Image 1 (cartoon, rainbow, N blue to C red):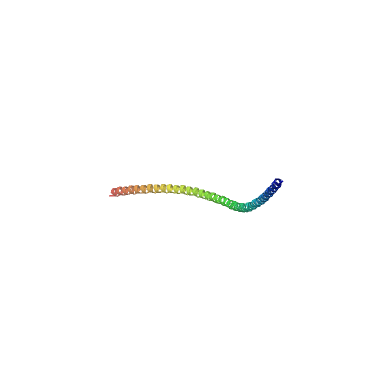
Image 2: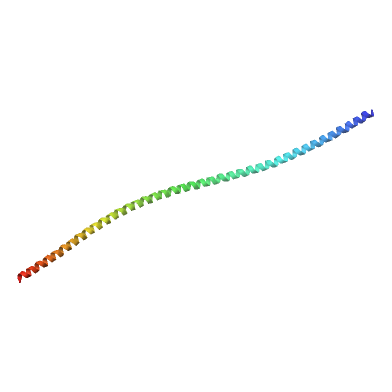
Length: 147
């Protein structure tokens, strides 16, 4: 019977030890769960912070994109205006080139007319000189006949 009592006491101690181990395991589990919850909360806060940063970055990019779009549109309009100005200036240059060609041709015509007049005047001088020579010959002949 002593043995049975000893055995019962032993089993009782073992049971208490097992209960104590289970309590410690429960405490360890609770601490582990709390630590995991704390880590999850920390991760959630970091994730939320990253989300907020990404949202702000996205808003910044959209704002910059809109500004760039407006700037690009204004540049395109300026380019169109400059192209129109270039076309107008090109037309003006073409008109001036045509006028220059016309004036050049008129100048050539005037030069040809002047050359014709000069040739005509040269021929008239030659005729005058020939007439003068003929007149002098006739005067000599007339003077010789009178003598």
